[in-house]
Structures are given as structure tokens and as C-alpha cells.
Image 1 (cartoon, one colour):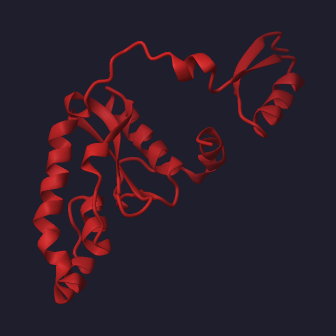
Image 2 (spheres, one colour):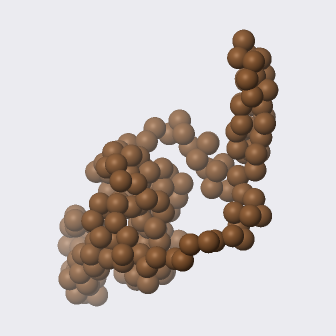
Length: 179
């Protein structure tokens, strides 16, 4: 029916199933590796400091556990991270006093990273901020943020008010991709 060739990235266990479906409709399938030696070794562009980046999805790691905060911003990332840092530091006084700990646990802050730091008494890796992806379109950036959160399933720090809800139907594909 198709009489065409389809090129898909190879993901063990998933690509074989997709290939069988395309073959039923008369399409030949070529599978290419997700990672190549060239992709891993060749980096022609200089790395840009995260503080200079805007319109991106980013992640901030916790130094005491494997949790990561995933967020998105259209503004300068250095300014946004500075806002996170300022809010965390302003709530730092609450986490060291036992009586205040209960109040801190019940308080909902602007940022989920602040909630994590104050409730768990953890330290954020402000120097290890990583840009996960770039996107100029706001809605597409929200989707990329949702994908990044899902890829860190069980380790992502986020609030229930994320901008875009990603259905769990994509879990198998996303979790295979990150392996």
C-alpha cells in the first residue's frame, strides 16, 4: 500500500514491533541508532553558559539525593535560577527549627524546589544547572518540560500545577529513549 521506506530510531523491544506494523502495510523499515560515535565525539559549538540562555527547559539537581527539579522559562535562565535561589535562601531559616519544620511542611511555596529544600533539609546544586532543551514556542516548551519530568519519573520535583499534562501512554517510549 505505502510502497515507501520508513526510517525510525532503533529502540530495543519497541522498534521491532513498529517495524512489523509498517511491513504489514507494505513499507520497508530502516532502523538507525539513537547514538552514534560521531554524535558522542563531535561537538563543534562552544558551550554557552546557562545564565545566557532563554526560552528553554532546564533542570536543577539536589546534592543530597537523586531528585531533580525540571522547569521552563522564556526569560533569561540566569535570572530565573536567581529567583529560585532567592526564594530557597529566604526560606532557609525555617528548616533548622523543629517547631518551624511542621509549618514549613504545610506551607506551599512558589517553587517545588523550595518545597523540597525546606521539607527535606537538602542542598541544591546551583552550579550544576543544565539546559535540557530549547524552544521558542511556549506551548511546545511546556510539552518538552512535561517530557523531561516524565523521563525523570520518580525523581522529578514538580508541583501539580505543571503547564501541560502528559498522558502515561507515552511512558514506555520515553523511558526506553532515556536508557
